[in-house]
Length: 233
Image (cartoon, rainbow, N blue to C red; front, side, top):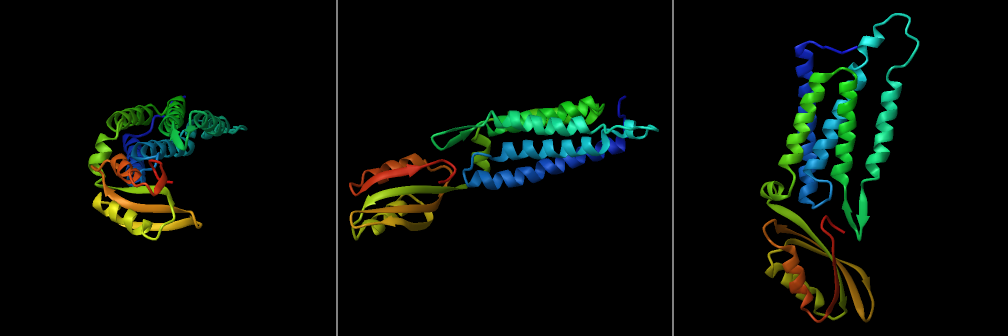
């Protein structure tokens, strides 16, 4: 039996999804600044899916619950769908050499389950609008070009393994400043008579190529190894 709600109720559901998408975008924007794998797109998709799951859970079974002498729980299967799809989504996430991929795909699978549940519950209006919204978001934020325009500064974190010499810290800090790295913080993680391991944290303009900074530092003979991961160490 279809769940046809008044247009004001449908619009209220849509508003909830839009507000959830906005909140997810704000959180994702902060993660994008930190160069984390789960950025704006992933957070928006998860926020929309969560809002849709909640709407279906609250309002998707009113037609059955209004029946007299009902002795079953109509939301039981829906709850199992959320759990089952979560396992499927987790299987799409891959970790290779400290690089994570598939987060947005996993979130998309989860959101698709929410849309399927909404349509299955007869909530066609909100299911179709959520599909259109997710399609636009996935298409709009498909690459990092838009995010880069919205993100003026990003975090720059590296791990440096160098020969322990008295002037190694000032040299590294000066070279970072020459490459326009701001708010530089250097922490000593390990030190011995022969080597020193440093964790360097800073902020750079998004238009600066972080790879060029690493290659410049690599030219120093005292630096033996530099570890860098997009999204922080």
